[in-house]
Length: 383
Image (tube, rainbow, N blue to C red; front, side, top):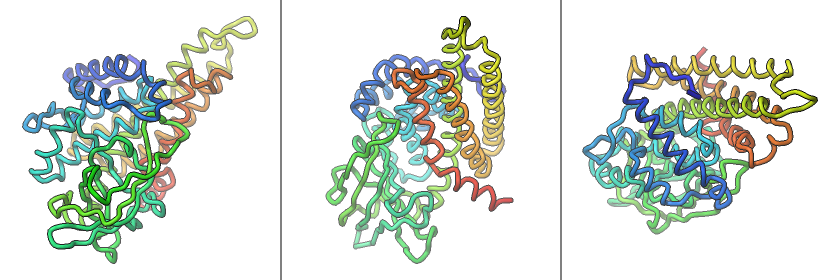
């Protein structure tokens, strides 16, 4: 198997799901990803097929139309997406599906009934809007405001670098409801795409992950019912913190899976590419480089397994472990991908070789869901 799965962590039902997910990406994403890169978007048909395959809304129970999977099913989905040929392009788009679990954790019964069945079918896509033009990793610095007005809240402000801007049907919007309270004055609201005052801005062009669209939002007196409050009033930071811990661990897992795919592709490439009368693999330098990469990948897998065992023991993603995973695994991925491109030579710089797309996508992983610098700062504060 391409990735090292610990049978003491994953059960047979997870491995059955793994095979389903792997076949789905091989059949419904990998053959089309180059066209989606050119389109800078993924068709709605992909999401509908994913819903039919039972790989959306993984943690949603049967009562809301979901498959009723557990946290490890989500991990399996994340690993297989990260390892797939298409994962480098569609990763940010696919990872939005994690918001189903957020809705299960913090949504009202009415919100769950309205949105979860559609999300599970691929009929409702979400976008989580936090980052702003003047605030990125510093969540407490957001400026978008939501002011109570009768039975509604009126939202004004702007967001940027938002994944899924072109196709999202529902937006989770982080706002300041008590501007004087810092991180304790943040609330989150739900707004549907066609609500007056919710204005879609530019779709932004990126270095990589082209099939996952990204862009800007502007709120001009966007009026949403008070019933659209997601989670507690002024308790948005708690919602964000829980989702961020999961998200950071998942992006660490994606980084490891993508690095593993790049490594596997590179081993195959150097064993078949010849130079100076022998394969590139036959050179001692190549074998030494690959040995170092293999060691990095094995150490990374061991740390992921530690994080998963903590979850199985406590029922929660440990914040410190997730932070370390988000720091080290994408940094490791960067080292692996750089060497993989180098071992491909000129071919590694060509997008027709997956290692090129993996390389540009991997650069995002040190920024997305919290920069490496923020991770270092959080780890340092806990010392």
